Image (cartoon, rainbow, N blue to C red; front, side):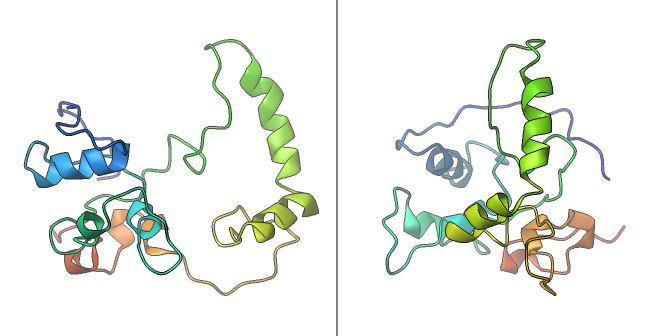
Length: 161
């Protein structure tokens, strides 16, 4: 519908594991919540395997696509990349100071070099220093009404109305 959700009640997790995302998912899977708010790429970030030292429940997150799936992606209007770089008191003017500096830095080779050094070329904002790419948009970066996946793949598309 491209509209914000309304008419819901936020609930706190009913379990405490020391990992907020585990707590939210466990609360959902226990039936104590109907939905949870989480980054659309969270499941990808919580994959377990060789070389991974997880502080999350690998078995629970492996239930993706069977016991739980995303039903909404593409809520882009509230944040740029969903990352908070600074917190300040409302009206402090900090955003007016930082935002131009950040925008300027995003256009530099130094920004590209940092992204490359840490293996984030696919999730950084590309600038002229990034190699040209024919990479397709990642599933979790698409709005729900553009998904061609199934719930069994973990990303439920909009139902045909």
